[in-house]
Image (cartoon, rainbow, N blue to C red; front, side, top):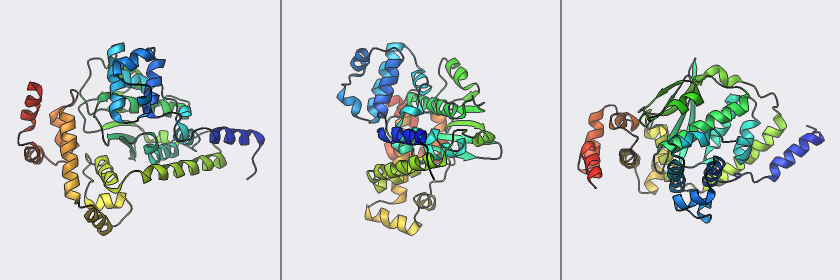
Length: 346
């Protein structure tokens, strides 16, 4: 396929950029907070971070920035405000592939495929039925907090608006955390029903929106960008060991109950026998990893101020609360309520 000079310039410009990220998530949060009017010096002081530490993309650095911004601006919805300013043009190869996709369905499939280039502590999944599309955000590791969820859902909405050049009418947004004192900023941003203390962090919209076309789509340019994104994803994946990938796979589908050895093996593109053999080589079993994940998630959730106990069994994939309570007592030698009360006394 021949290309004209303008297309060649466009390709050269995009490929000359740093296609990993224009800057990492910690830096992206820092820059966005400064653009909101926070003094860079004050933000560093309040978060107790150095300039050098902004290069570190660990989730504790993100959380320190969120807490600092909340204090400095007295703005609990700070994650939402930052997310709604997220610009795919400045998020490296993932943003470019998203914007250059043929339609919104392909754009979302692409961002989900390459999501771990952007963030490694959260996953994004798309499911559909005859009426709606459902995009689910799941924490894979790190601290569970409302700022990160607000940030990712807000960014998703802003990216979709940037692609579609129109405002999507969302059906509802659900959150795992409890209802904040002021929901007006969320209603204004999403214009739909909001539900809290839900089993999933979810945004729902008409499935017909997935067919929104990109009028500027160019197959050649998109194929080049996609090739670079796939190469980069392979480089990122090399740094994630087998056990971590298993844990991430279990976490993604925990609340939906599709975490059996067969389901995980299928998601990892291997037979159940191969999966179990690789676990044995690591001195692990599927049940051990499942139990470890449930334990870790349960403790992390209960230690957050914006999560509630009643939803936890379903979030962990238990068919009823009895199984969860038995497991929790085995993990901690106390009930969930006793655990919370003990934490309050500390």
